[in-house]
Length: 266
Picture 1 (cartoon, rainbow, N blue to C red):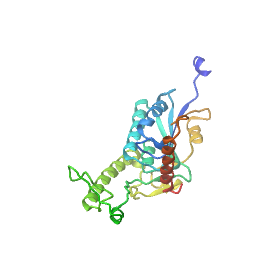
Picture 2: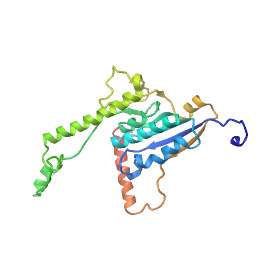
Picture 3: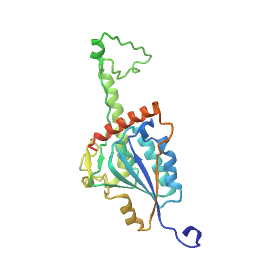
Picture 4: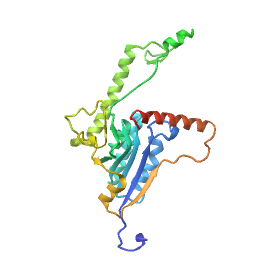
């Protein structure tokens, strides 16, 4: 009713943007990606003119590109609307999850939250001996010597590995630059922060990767007062049409999600 009473000031409002899951271009299993999140991120920063946006994040990472796109969208809107952003880590904000968290102005964690893993990983399998054992002949024809790079059905090529490492170093350098830009003088330069290590809870304080231990509601009440109002925004999973291939697709997504979180013991 306050909005209809002249000169009556409305209580502060905080948009809570919930981001949970692995980060991937495909939306399978509710994965986080820029296209799927664009609408709710826009609403979080614009609907009702919020006083702040609190990003509640729980992600073990995933696609470097999608992580960068999501983080860039958050920063762009935060600067356009002049809205301060806070990240609150639940179980984990690692790798791409931390990339997104560091788009916020402050990062707060639970005493058991896992943060870090600032690095790049690529994993696969080699099936050369397997197909030879069964008399299978691999036939690949390319125009361009690098088109079959890292083919799992051919012997590992040192030149391919060298190219992959160069790509990883390029992505890693971009990740490091993002964290340094966002965290600035808060970072402890005497600690090796970018080797893929992780930290739990307030252990991250020494590194400068986080600002402290704190949870969404009490921290926002501390900043804006007890009368602060919260508006929650998150991806919605469809209630209908979850039959056949969709169920299988979601099941596979859930397996991938669980495996990614398990790497960090959560």
